[in-house]
Length: 125
Length: 214
Ligand SMILES: C[S@@+](CC[C@H](N)C(=O)[O-])C[C@H]1O[C@@H](n2cnc3c(N)ncnc32)[C@H](O)[C@@H]1O
Image 1 (tube, rainbow over the protein chains, first blue to last red):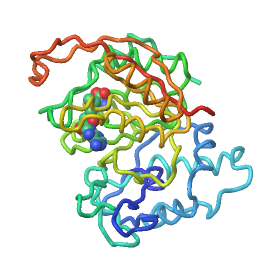
Image 2: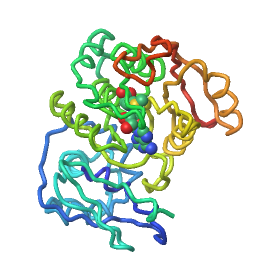
Image 3: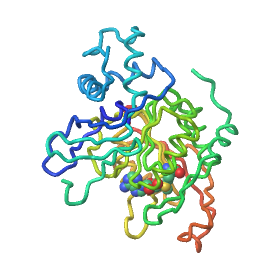
């Protein structure tokens, strides 16, 4: 699971959960894979993100170093910023661990890089 | 951006992918054949510029033909999701074999709402949804609706041509726009017992469905 994916995931479908966001990450295995750098793509995606959640998530798995706490003004022209964003969003991946719903405490296992977000019928709203 | 890959080269890559190991009939697990997927992806890129540099969702990815094909066509990042663990295992093998790194997978039910924080987050959604059988008729339309909610531009979806007028009616009902952008022939594998009695050669449409403002 890449952090770009984590930034969008919620556990709102659980019965009684209001926002289910952000999911806490517990990682036992994190890897970094190289991904082609595409500044235009990043510039379009970054405004959709919750940057604070990205920052916290990156730090919680030990990859937050040097990542600015907020999106910088004119970030589209700031290559240093974009490269850091590129790395945490697309290159860092949680291989093993679990996600935790902030309200219900329900855990979602991440195995071989894939989070299992399936719920039982009884758990759904 | 990168020049568009030749159709034949794309099809060649897609032919390398592994298919479902033990297709589950209940989940309608048959993969989009490489020639169909290649023509579909090629059309989506060359006519609508909807893959290169885009944020793409592959809904019900199975072994990943559509999502991996989108990545090969230059997608900025691809999210793939399927409800089935075994399908995702093959998906992961294909990702590793192809050495594609800008793709991420999730195990979830595409029809359960609210998995994602934002609506209209993805630029492009690709899918070959379950057609629906007696027990879950209408699942294809549910997939289409869920996909529309998640995308800001267009959904590209494969459907049996025999459902064309039904889809036309539905999209009118929903107040969205859409048309068939390619007509293809889907050769269901004979091993897929469920379809054995029926004609193996099925005409399919590649639909482009989108919000009126986009
Ligand atoms: C017709 S196959 C298409 C596979 C692949 N996209 C392709 O084009 O080769 C449909 C896929 O949808 C998946 N599926 C069925 N119901 C689903 C659901 N509710 N949520 C997510 N995936 C589902 C199945 O496991 C299967 O992999």
